[in-house]
Length: 226
Image 1 (spheres, rainbow, N blue to C red):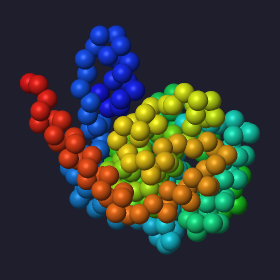
Image 2: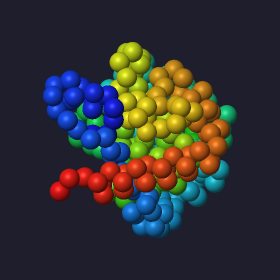
Image 3: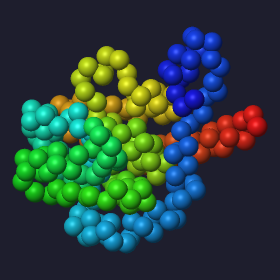
Image 4: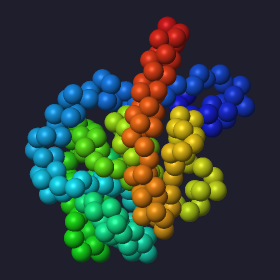
Protein backbone atom coordinates (compact mmCIF):
# COMPACT_ATOMS: atom_id res chain seq x y z
CA UNK A 1 0.00 0.00 0.00
CA UNK A 2 1.55 3.30 -1.13
CA UNK A 3 0.07 5.80 1.35
CA UNK A 4 -1.20 5.88 4.92
CA UNK A 5 -4.63 7.30 4.01
CA UNK A 6 -5.49 4.29 1.85
CA UNK A 7 -3.94 1.93 4.39
CA UNK A 8 -6.17 3.38 7.11
CA UNK A 9 -9.29 2.94 4.95
CA UNK A 10 -8.38 -0.68 4.27
CA UNK A 11 -7.71 -1.38 7.94
CA UNK A 12 -11.15 0.04 8.79
CA UNK A 13 -12.65 -2.67 6.58
CA UNK A 14 -10.55 -5.44 8.08
CA UNK A 15 -7.98 -5.59 5.28
CA UNK A 16 -4.36 -5.71 6.35
CA UNK A 17 -1.98 -4.01 3.91
CA UNK A 18 1.70 -3.25 4.38
CA UNK A 19 3.00 0.23 3.61
CA UNK A 20 5.58 0.60 0.81
CA UNK A 21 6.47 3.36 -1.66
CA UNK A 22 5.16 3.16 -5.21
CA UNK A 23 7.59 1.16 -7.41
CA UNK A 24 8.12 4.27 -9.59
CA UNK A 25 10.42 5.65 -6.87
CA UNK A 26 12.99 3.22 -8.32
CA UNK A 27 13.04 4.90 -11.75
CA UNK A 28 16.41 6.59 -11.26
CA UNK A 29 18.02 3.75 -9.31
CA UNK A 30 17.13 1.12 -11.91
CA UNK A 31 16.96 3.06 -15.16
CA UNK A 32 18.78 6.34 -14.48
CA UNK A 33 21.51 5.73 -17.04
CA UNK A 34 19.08 4.90 -19.82
CA UNK A 35 16.84 7.86 -18.99
CA UNK A 36 19.68 10.38 -18.78
CA UNK A 37 21.06 9.13 -22.10
CA UNK A 38 17.61 9.55 -23.62
CA UNK A 39 17.56 13.18 -22.41
CA UNK A 40 20.52 13.92 -24.67
CA UNK A 41 18.88 12.46 -27.77
CA UNK A 42 16.07 13.55 -30.09
CA UNK A 43 13.46 14.79 -29.40
CA UNK A 44 14.66 15.82 -25.91
CA UNK A 45 17.87 17.49 -27.03
CA UNK A 46 15.90 20.07 -29.02
CA UNK A 47 14.12 21.13 -25.82
CA UNK A 48 17.39 21.62 -23.95
CA UNK A 49 18.69 23.65 -26.88
CA UNK A 50 15.56 25.82 -26.90
CA UNK A 51 15.71 26.56 -23.17
CA UNK A 52 19.33 27.04 -22.19
CA UNK A 53 18.35 28.20 -18.68
CA UNK A 54 16.09 25.22 -18.12
CA UNK A 55 12.40 24.46 -18.31
CA UNK A 56 9.42 23.42 -16.24
CA UNK A 57 7.83 20.12 -17.29
CA UNK A 58 4.11 20.92 -17.06
CA UNK A 59 1.20 18.48 -17.28
CA UNK A 60 -2.46 18.53 -16.29
CA UNK A 61 -5.49 16.41 -17.06
CA UNK A 62 -8.58 17.37 -19.04
CA UNK A 63 -10.51 18.47 -15.94
CA UNK A 64 -8.43 21.66 -16.08
CA UNK A 65 -9.49 22.39 -19.65
CA UNK A 66 -12.22 25.01 -19.27
CA UNK A 67 -11.51 28.54 -20.49
CA UNK A 68 -11.51 30.18 -17.06
CA UNK A 69 -9.00 27.66 -15.70
CA UNK A 70 -6.76 27.97 -18.76
CA UNK A 71 -6.77 31.76 -18.37
CA UNK A 72 -5.49 31.41 -14.81
CA UNK A 73 -2.91 28.78 -15.76
CA UNK A 74 -1.64 30.99 -18.57
CA UNK A 75 -1.26 33.88 -16.14
CA UNK A 76 0.55 31.79 -13.56
CA UNK A 77 2.85 30.01 -16.00
CA UNK A 78 3.69 33.34 -17.66
CA UNK A 79 4.80 34.51 -14.22
CA UNK A 80 6.99 31.41 -13.92
CA UNK A 81 8.60 32.24 -17.27
CA UNK A 82 9.23 35.84 -16.24
CA UNK A 83 10.25 35.35 -12.61
CA UNK A 84 12.22 32.10 -12.89
CA UNK A 85 13.51 32.55 -16.47
CA UNK A 86 12.28 29.09 -17.38
CA UNK A 87 10.73 27.69 -20.51
CA UNK A 88 7.46 25.77 -20.30
CA UNK A 89 7.17 22.30 -21.84
CA UNK A 90 3.63 20.90 -21.90
CA UNK A 91 3.55 17.10 -22.00
CA UNK A 92 1.10 14.26 -21.54
CA UNK A 93 1.57 11.73 -18.76
CA UNK A 94 -1.11 9.63 -20.46
CA UNK A 95 -3.69 9.85 -23.23
CA UNK A 96 -6.63 7.77 -21.97
CA UNK A 97 -10.05 9.50 -22.02
CA UNK A 98 -10.07 12.43 -19.56
CA UNK A 99 -6.35 12.11 -19.03
CA UNK A 100 -4.16 14.71 -20.80
CA UNK A 101 -5.21 16.35 -24.08
CA UNK A 102 -2.93 18.04 -26.62
CA UNK A 103 -5.84 20.16 -27.88
CA UNK A 104 -6.24 21.67 -24.40
CA UNK A 105 -2.50 22.28 -24.21
CA UNK A 106 -2.68 24.05 -27.58
CA UNK A 107 -5.40 26.34 -26.21
CA UNK A 108 -3.18 27.16 -23.24
CA UNK A 109 -0.21 27.83 -25.52
CA UNK A 110 -2.31 30.34 -27.50
CA UNK A 111 -2.86 32.29 -24.27
CA UNK A 112 0.89 32.60 -23.63
CA UNK A 113 3.11 34.85 -25.71
CA UNK A 114 6.34 32.86 -25.81
CA UNK A 115 8.64 30.27 -24.22
CA UNK A 116 6.16 27.39 -24.49
CA UNK A 117 6.64 24.11 -26.33
CA UNK A 118 4.24 21.21 -26.83
CA UNK A 119 5.89 17.82 -26.36
CA UNK A 120 3.76 15.17 -28.04
CA UNK A 121 5.70 11.96 -27.38
CA UNK A 122 3.95 9.31 -25.28
CA UNK A 123 7.04 7.09 -25.11
CA UNK A 124 7.57 6.28 -21.43
CA UNK A 125 11.34 6.80 -21.68
CA UNK A 126 10.84 10.21 -23.31
CA UNK A 127 8.42 11.25 -20.56
CA UNK A 128 10.78 10.14 -17.80
CA UNK A 129 13.71 11.87 -19.52
CA UNK A 130 11.72 15.08 -19.90
CA UNK A 131 10.96 15.15 -16.16
CA UNK A 132 14.47 14.07 -15.14
CA UNK A 133 16.10 16.84 -17.18
CA UNK A 134 13.67 19.55 -16.08
CA UNK A 135 14.25 22.22 -13.47
CA UNK A 136 10.84 21.42 -11.93
CA UNK A 137 7.79 19.24 -12.50
CA UNK A 138 4.37 20.96 -12.23
CA UNK A 139 1.30 18.85 -12.83
CA UNK A 140 -1.69 16.84 -11.71
CA UNK A 141 -0.18 13.37 -12.16
CA UNK A 142 0.93 11.46 -9.08
CA UNK A 143 3.41 9.40 -11.11
CA UNK A 144 4.78 12.56 -12.66
CA UNK A 145 5.56 13.65 -9.12
CA UNK A 146 7.08 10.31 -8.19
CA UNK A 147 9.43 10.32 -11.19
CA UNK A 148 10.48 13.86 -10.21
CA UNK A 149 11.07 12.59 -6.67
CA UNK A 150 13.21 9.72 -7.97
CA UNK A 151 15.44 12.15 -9.88
CA UNK A 152 15.57 14.65 -7.00
CA UNK A 153 13.76 17.32 -9.01
CA UNK A 154 11.57 20.00 -7.40
CA UNK A 155 7.88 19.18 -7.84
CA UNK A 156 4.43 20.50 -7.13
CA UNK A 157 1.08 18.89 -7.85
CA UNK A 158 -1.76 21.05 -9.13
CA UNK A 159 -5.22 20.28 -7.74
CA UNK A 160 -8.67 21.82 -7.89
CA UNK A 161 -9.71 24.04 -5.02
CA UNK A 162 -12.26 21.57 -3.65
CA UNK A 163 -9.57 18.88 -3.44
CA UNK A 164 -7.68 20.94 -0.87
CA UNK A 165 -10.46 20.15 1.61
CA UNK A 166 -10.32 16.40 0.91
CA UNK A 167 -6.63 15.64 0.29
CA UNK A 168 -6.18 13.78 -3.03
CA UNK A 169 -3.85 10.88 -3.72
CA UNK A 170 -0.96 13.23 -4.54
CA UNK A 171 -1.17 14.84 -1.10
CA UNK A 172 -1.64 11.48 0.61
CA UNK A 173 1.49 10.09 -1.02
CA UNK A 174 3.54 13.17 -0.21
CA UNK A 175 2.35 13.21 3.40
CA UNK A 176 3.46 9.58 3.76
CA UNK A 177 6.89 9.80 2.17
CA UNK A 178 8.05 13.42 1.82
CA UNK A 179 9.63 15.66 4.49
CA UNK A 180 7.41 18.43 5.86
CA UNK A 181 9.45 21.07 4.05
CA UNK A 182 8.43 19.82 0.59
CA UNK A 183 4.96 21.05 -0.36
CA UNK A 184 2.55 18.57 -1.89
CA UNK A 185 -0.13 20.48 -3.79
CA UNK A 186 -1.21 23.91 -4.95
CA UNK A 187 -4.29 25.35 -6.63
CA UNK A 188 -4.04 26.89 -10.08
CA UNK A 189 -4.23 30.39 -8.61
CA UNK A 190 -0.97 29.83 -6.70
CA UNK A 191 1.15 27.95 -9.24
CA UNK A 192 3.76 30.71 -9.61
CA UNK A 193 4.20 31.13 -5.86
CA UNK A 194 4.39 27.37 -5.28
CA UNK A 195 6.92 27.01 -8.10
CA UNK A 196 9.15 29.67 -6.56
CA UNK A 197 9.05 27.92 -3.19
CA UNK A 198 9.82 24.51 -4.71
CA UNK A 199 12.77 25.86 -6.70
CA UNK A 200 14.27 27.25 -3.49
CA UNK A 201 14.39 23.87 -1.77
CA UNK A 202 17.92 22.67 -0.93
CA UNK A 203 19.31 20.17 -3.42
CA UNK A 204 20.55 18.08 -0.50
CA UNK A 205 16.98 17.67 0.83
CA UNK A 206 15.69 16.54 -2.57
CA UNK A 207 18.57 14.08 -2.98
CA UNK A 208 18.16 12.70 0.54
CA UNK A 209 14.44 12.13 -0.10
CA UNK A 210 15.16 10.28 -3.34
CA UNK A 211 17.80 8.07 -1.72
CA UNK A 212 15.61 7.40 1.31
CA UNK A 213 12.72 6.25 -0.88
CA UNK A 214 14.99 3.80 -2.68
CA UNK A 215 16.13 2.41 0.66
CA UNK A 216 12.58 2.13 1.95
CA UNK A 217 11.33 0.42 -1.21
CA UNK A 218 14.18 -2.10 -1.21
CA UNK A 219 13.54 -2.90 2.45
CA UNK A 220 9.81 -3.38 1.84
CA UNK A 221 10.46 -5.53 -1.25
CA UNK A 222 13.03 -7.69 0.53
CA UNK A 223 10.70 -8.37 3.47
CA UNK A 224 7.55 -8.98 1.42
CA UNK A 225 5.97 -12.41 1.94
CA UNK A 226 6.47 -14.86 -0.96
